[in-house]
Each structure stands twice: as C-alpha cells, then as structure tokens.
Length: 578
Picture 1 (cartoon, helix red, strand yellow):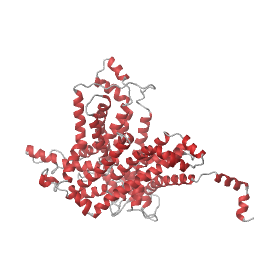
Picture 2 (tube, one colour):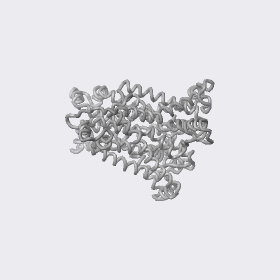
Picture 3 (tube, helix red, strand yellow):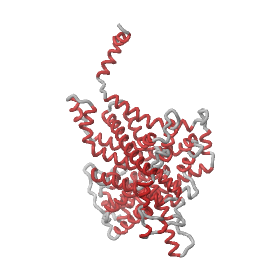
Picture 4 (spheres, one colour):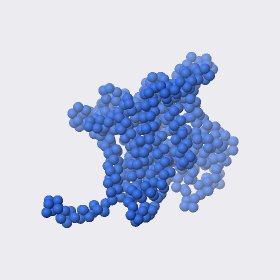
C-alpha cells in the first residue's frame, strides 16, 4: 500500500472519513462566517488593549501610556467634561422625551401623528448637522437669535452663546431625546389602565396618578433611555468638535482626535479610551439588569384595557410643550440650514436677491472631490448594509438552528459592538489594520469593515428576530426532498424574511451614511465621506456649501426612510431602534 492508503486503512481514519461525508458543504460557509465575525470583533479590541500596554518603539509591556494619558490635568478635565456632558444630556433628554411619550401614549393630546413625525425627524438628523444649525442660530455674534436680540433691544452683544457647555448639552439632547421617547412610549403602550383607575377611585388626580403610578411602572424603560442618551453623549465626536473646540474646552472624543494629530500617538489614545470603554460596558450591564427586571410587568395574560386620559384644556399645554421641543430639535435648525444652503451669503438673511442654486451646482457638478465624497458615502453605506446583513443573517441562522456549540458566544460577539463607542472602535481598527502587513489605513476597505462592525448589532437584532419567527419545519421539508441548507435558505427563508431584511438594510444604511465618530480616524484623501467633509467645511467656515451638502444627505435619508414606511410600515425606524 501507499502511505496514504496505509493511513486511511486505520480505524480512526476511516471513522473520520465517514463523518466528513455527512458534513454538508454549507458548514464550510458557516465556519467561514464565524471566522469573519471573530476577526472583525475580537481583533481590534485585543489590539486596542495590547496597544495601550505597549511601548511604541520596542513593543515591550508598560504602563507609561496610561501615565501620559492621565498624568495631564488637561486630559483629566476633558474626562470630567465628558461626564458632565453625559449627565446633562441624559437629564435634558429625559425632560424632553418622557412627557411627550406620556402625552402621545396615554392622553387625548391632539396632533399625535405630527409629533411622532417630528420626533422621527430629530432621530434621523445627524447630531453634527443639528450643531451646525444651532451655530447659525446662536453663534455669539452672527447667530440669528443674537442678531434679532441686538436689533430689538439695542444691546451690544447677543443673549446666547452656543460655544459653551450648556449649548453643547442642548444640541446633543435634542438629537438624543428620541431614545428616551421610544423606550418610554413602548413601555407605556403595554401598561393597562387598571392601576390608574384604582388610583382615581382612591382620590388621586391625573397628575398625581401619573407621577405615583404610571411613570414608576415604566421606570426601568425610562432609565434605559437615559443610559443610551448618556452613552451617546460621551462617545459623540461631531457636535463636540464643532462646539467645544471653538468654545475652548475639551471632551474625551476631541482629546482622542488630537492624539491622532502629527505625530500620531495611538498607544496613548488606546490607553485614554479605556475608561470610556469601561464606563460604557458598566452602564449597558446596568441597563440590561434594569430592563431585565420587567418593571412594567403589570400586563396580565389576558391583556388590559388602555383608555386615554382626558386632559381637558391641559391637552393644548402638552401639545405646546411637544411643539416647543420639536421646534428646538427640528424646525429651527432645519430652517436655517435650508436658508444657508440656498443663500449666496447666509448672514445676509432671507431675500430674493440672496437666493442661489450655486452651492448645489458646485457640489454636484463642479467640485470633483465633493462628487467623489458623495459617491463614497453611499457606496460605503450600501456595501456596509449588504455585508452586515449577510454576516448577521448567517450567524443568526447558525445560532437559531444550533449548528455549532457555544452559540451564546456568537450572540455576544454580534452584540458586543453595541457597547463599544465608535471612536474607541476606530482606534482599535487603526491599531489592528493600519500597520503592515495589512496597511489598510486610508482605504475604503477599512472604512467598510469598521462600519460593518459598528452597525452589526442592528442587523443581527433584526435577523435573529425574524429567524425566531420562522419554524424549521419548512426547511426540513426541503432537505427531506434532497435539498441542502443553502437551497432551503434561498427558497424558503429569504422570501419569508424579505421585509425584515429590507428594514434591517435601511436601518444599517442610514447610520452608515452619517457616521463620523469612526470615519474621522480612518478615511484618507480619496476615501472621505460626507460626514468628514462636513466637518472639514465647518473648520473652513464655509457654511453655505456645508448646509447644501447636509441637505443632500438629509434628502437621501428621508427618501430611504419613506421607502421604509412604504415597504415595512409606520414607525419602523423608531421601534426597531429601541
């Protein structure tokens, strides 16, 4: 016999061959997808931790990076500023979101559809565009509010200054309060009116019942929304960079960005990012504990009747409050952005002789770099959505059908990026893939990989939910008739999940086209995206072109959202994102 035949003649080898014959070819695909998942999630995080403990020249282990990161009073102040920003945003987002959610869910307040639409508008508005709108409104000298104040009162200076911590808290809160609204509204929709009726019978009025009965029932959901708002605030880069830097104060995100100025100090940046990562993980753990308690478990097995509370004249007060919040979040910033986008000079105000289409013509037909940036944004967004859905669907299938052991580990890996701030993830990708031999820095590949990792939890949540709703019996019928798993997926699962996957694609595509926190660290001259170009234009003070570019991004976002409404249904973005 030949040596190969001798080996195959052994009993153990024959047993292995028999087992391999029964392994479907699709198993290779599942194992490859699992390897990609581990590569995307584990490699940057491990590299981030290792980099924070390495000397840049020798690679030896050291704690000196942490000493340099936190040995400066300025760096510590930036961390404290971020915590102040997070707490302020959470409190203000709660003040905005909870009353509106209660009014929409539990009362007879009019114009609820319009209020929901405005909340959705705040949700899809990128925070850095809201920041630009409020710079045009409340800049210390040229802002519209200050100009009107000076003209009306004859004062020597304006009344508000957006370049301050209160200004930054306001801007971030008006784009974060939809999280609180969604969490609270979803919980209130589940609460029966029985306990409120009992409170009324015992003599409690409407407002006391709200504070003593209704809101305590949904407290875990409210706290969950507040935690999301807090984490969004401390991890955000765009709005703080536009407001904090001109205001001459730092937060963690802007300080991390400065570590990437020449000379790049990625090891110190990795060390400086560690507390942000630990805070994020700790608060998400707390959120899961709170929501896991099911604090609004007053819903019985038979369901309960939910009656709207008649507010009388107060319903107009609540509508006025909701309108005021929506005015701050959507109407005012979007109005000044539109004015600037169609203006020759935004400071000249609203007049026919100041109207022009030149800003759009410049972006779409004259400036080749802007054209490439727009193309990059939507190509990267589309590639990210397709790749994230493909990976998430494969992993969700493996988990739901238990094709491999330790499926809970795969679920954890898919959801892990949800607790990693985009700016921290970007530093991990830079540390892992920028140096040779991969040398991916500045390429479209590293941007798409980072975006796929960043938004994988959205795709996985939708895919896993859809997979759980489909019984394996129909797949088994295909396999009994001789088809493999891939055929069953193509002919059975994919058609049944098409709406679910379409919604997931939109929910990944939209945030990918507006992502700045990770893009700012990874793009190169040929791979810039709209969010980065908007930031660059703001540094140049070119608000007319910046506003036009922002309007283009918003128009595409609204169009995609409209398609989602048409295909998937009303409120699909808000409810899925919760």
